[in-house]
Length: 263
Image (cartoon, rainbow, N blue to C red; front, top):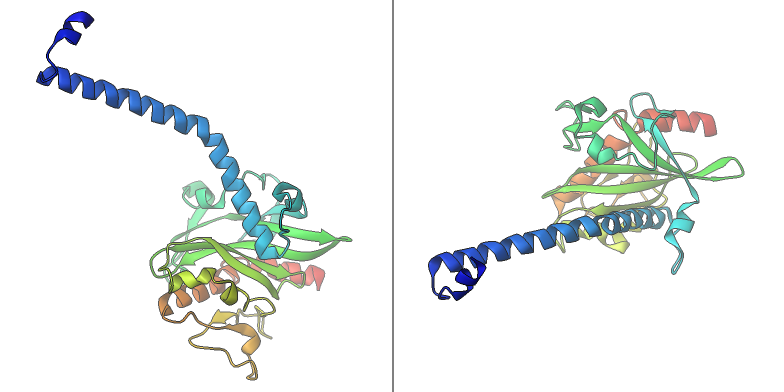
């Protein structure tokens, strides 16, 4: 049968279709096998990228340093957002907040009036990263996300051991317009965040991105960050996600208890 097939003229339609079908099958098997073989490497690279971003935002990344070794400075812990308490029955090294937000048993819907970050569903738990020294927490890194103009921005905010002063802020994933909303990646803009204060005297979230430039001589400037030129909606989205995740529906309960314990 094979000999008969090979002797069939190359312009035969059945032979042409058969050859194409076999070629597609072989290619699909090759691609699938490659994807399976490369998946562990891809997952490892993704973890390295995540750790690198957390280290950078916390100001602990060293040029040429081993990421895994440097990351040992952190103590990851899972927090129940509604209570602000640590939980011991969830492994912080494997817990995925983004996946959890899609599972009904691990998440809750966010009411429209509360959903200023436009996330729709919120995971019940989140992983925070603590930098400890001499039994004192020196820094906390918390995950944040929310919608900008075109996409959901995913990032981290680093806070000082006082639980209310920003030491670093940045995003690791978004699809905002390059040169406009994409300026959230600009080191100069990210450099405006360290030293800003999250909460006002009444304990409410005052930190926000404003339109235009902040006048440092005016009262309240410690709570404000310059807006992104030409990217009003992205700036508003960043402001909203900061307000949400540092407020009562986000890490507010956790940070309030943290400040009480360490104040």
